[in-house]
Image (cartoon, rainbow, N blue to C red; front, side, top):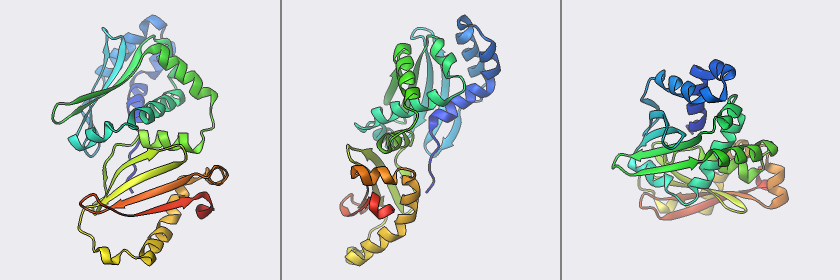
Length: 253
């Protein structure tokens, strides 16, 4: 599966490329100027995933914030509006900022941080951090270096643009609950439901086990201890649920 890279690494990496040396030698009062000079060096728009383009990167003086603007398809935008998305995305953004080489400079700049999405039909959505919130969440993230299973999966899902089209099947979304991680898939072509027998489902589970085990490392012992599961809901082209495959920690041991 073509796993999309977290968009935060791409954005922060661009500024790092053009401005890191100067950040290290800049005084606090100069941070905003350096951000502006870095953005002027970027060759936008940049396409880095199907249906996702980074179109703008700028300092908004009125809001005192660094702003990234993404143009996305309507289908992707609808998934960004999923009720679980904002919390997942915020955690992922903070985790990425915390690990970036110019995290301290960004926090000390006094500026906020905004990720804005624009759909093809003109809808807009923002994920916004005021500077004091950014500083607080970064400090919290740095104090909790080892991520637990659910936190790691929230960040992973939050950094992924859904849906992901694999041709004959689409990954619609991923959701983390209190005790499980669930992904929903939908076949694009019609499926002969007479083929979906207990033996067929068991075969599919065995086929998937290796890749699921890889994605769950190194959290399998935690999954066993806390009873967490990874679930894969399979839908037909009409959106009807055909079957669900679940993996416990013991399944993956």
